Length: 222
Image (tube, rainbow, N blue to C red):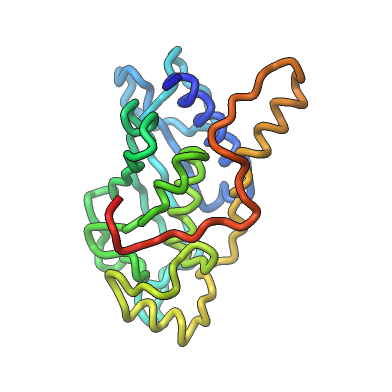
């Protein structure tokens, strides 16, 4: 079942890279055996029989606020995520993101209540995403970085209460960039599989993505 879920998850990551957010999220993988250390884009299929479980995700935003009224153009940062069997198969083990270089530089630190130099708190994003796949987690993290009100808790200052206050008073809870996050990819892929061959069973994990994306809860460990 682990291998089946990795394959399904990889298909969803490929679909994500062909969606509306491909300009903001770039996803790469390493071959499972480790013999090839290159990071390959998920738009290319693995050359090995086993599907990969080590990923690199790079977020690129036209605008990222790094202080009150101060923003960086064409902001970019990478993270790593390993999806071992224990993590993928257990509903209680969260996806973990590792910051490239182990930290944000001071000049690239998002002015976000849930970011500090050494951590990006994803709150319950991992728990919410476990039913839908890694692609959903990567989208939720992108929405957190982009300060999307539909995802980010508007009541918790967490690491940076000043960022929350400025976002509320000066930005009126507007996102940094206007991005349409494709939270319904799981549903789209199911329909796609049905249309290809109605006799082929569709493997479903969790329920269809709800029309209203769940809020992410911050400030506690999962």
